[in-house]
Amino acid sequence: MKRLREINWLMVALVGGVVLLTLAGAGLLGAYYMLSHRPAQEPAWVNPIDLIRPEAVAPDLAVLTLAGETDDRVIGAALDAGETESAYAALSYALLLSDNVRSGHWLLLADRYLQSDARRASASNQAALDLAALGPALNDLARGDVSLQAAHYFASLGKPWAARLALAQAESIARYSLTMMPSQRRLLLSHVVAAYQGLGDTKTAASIRAKMDDASEGPGISVESGQALLPALRGSVVLPPEVTTAVIARQQAAANMAAKWLAAPPSGRNSLAEALGGALRAEEAARSAFYAKGGEMQLADRLALLHDRLAWLTIKYRVAHQGYGVPLVPEWSDEAESIRSELNAAYTDLINGYGQQLDTLSPADAARARVELLRQGVLWTRLGLFPDHAEQALSEQLAQALQQLWTRQGGSGLTIVNQDSHGQRFFLLSGADVPKEGARTPG
Image 1 (cartoon, rainbow, N blue to C red):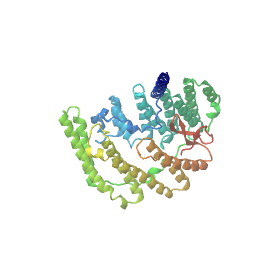
Image 2 (tube, rainbow, N blue to C red; image 1 turned 30 degrees about the horizontal axis):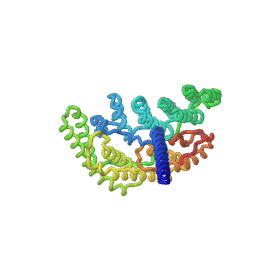
Image 3 (cartoon, rainbow, N blue to C red; image 1 turned 90 degrees about the vertical axis):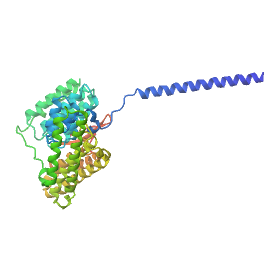
Image 4 (cartoon, helix red, strand yellow; image 1 turned 30 degrees about the vertical axis):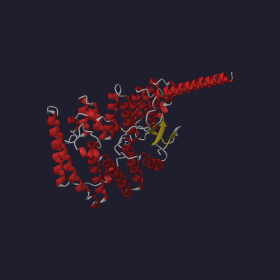
């Protein structure tokens, strides 16, 4: 009988263990289900360059920039041909576009990707909104228009919270710009009201409408925004004959590849790519010898040299990541990190060089030029062109420079704040005298 009781208790213990293991397994399965079905949090920031799909880039269109065509024309041709990926790649690496043209192209791409690729549409729209706040050369009317369009696309992407941030920026521009006419302020505010109504936010729309008369008052004259100061701080360089010859050879090889690519068989395409790769190698050798002499130049001329070097390093960086659709210089892919480091160093030298040149300006112009420089630096990082993690340091310096400029302006006009929302950071224009809840100055 005692033996029987021991067996019974053993059976009870075994059954209990099975039950506990079953419950534990069910709990783990439940936890797995919850985690696997939880919406993935969107990354705080996406480098537009990282979203390029090299295999989808049309090489015959992409190499047109290497043939001497402007980025604007190549992007436009790609969009007209329905080669959206080629347009995206060209825009992502473009250095010489104006803020106005660049923001317009990003908005066009946001529209193209709206139905087919929400992630790219969002990244394109974010780039446009960054330009609206940070682009040094945009006028306030253009900033307001870009903000409105960005709000529309964010709403279409199911991000009403981001749309409201863009609309708040458009409202601030209309209310606090120092350069807009009263009629322009009123028109922009009327569009903001309509956009809030479209979001179903009738309360905010009514509040803005009630204050529209006061907000759109002004002197009735247009105050011209100051001219860009940085271009006057740099000198010029003349490319030596060896570099000029190499550039011409590269352009001819790229033009030949663009013209013959579609009709060429696979072996012919390889030959075209190899010929262009050889021209790029020769140009690299000529440029390296030229850039090595930069230390002998005056600071202003070194700045011009750095601009030229950045344009070349960006080409190399794109080649290294097969951003032209095909491998052109295979060994550069192995050197991608080294090229990235060179690019970072060149941007750092450029920003520091301009910083030294600011001492040649009057205090008032130096304050404006410092803001112009730091806005451009932060924008380069946000667009992925300056691939270092320099946004934090530059934005902190920008906050200080903006505070100094705001003080000089008597506490009027617009300033830049950043706001973290849904795990993302936004740089936004705001009225300098109106603290924004949940927002803080860059840094």
